[in-house]
Length: 154
Image (cartoon, rainbow, N blue to C red):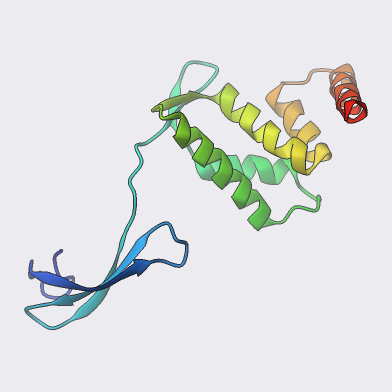
């Protein structure tokens, strides 16, 4: 690793440990040339995932866009920002486990809906109305009736 202070290429790792998030590795390093100490972080690199839109267009998976859509669906509900970030994190982990470089927006929408139905049914209906492109009040009514049936089945 090159020293950020003198650009010398020979640095030593003095200490390695998991970072606070337990996802990265934090390494304390020492430059053999100038004596500087610095920290580096090592992270797993996952390949970029492309989202295939309904139009067929492909775009990189955007966690912030996913978070914004959840924020809209859960506005004025009991979920806080950390809850939403955890949902996004869970969804991204599931997508990465598929092992594919591409995923359809339909599958992402279904993953979001599975998360929301467990946590907040009002947010679920809000998200579903956009995801399923509701056109009439009847669409809401039908979805809410299916929620009522699934509750009675339990």
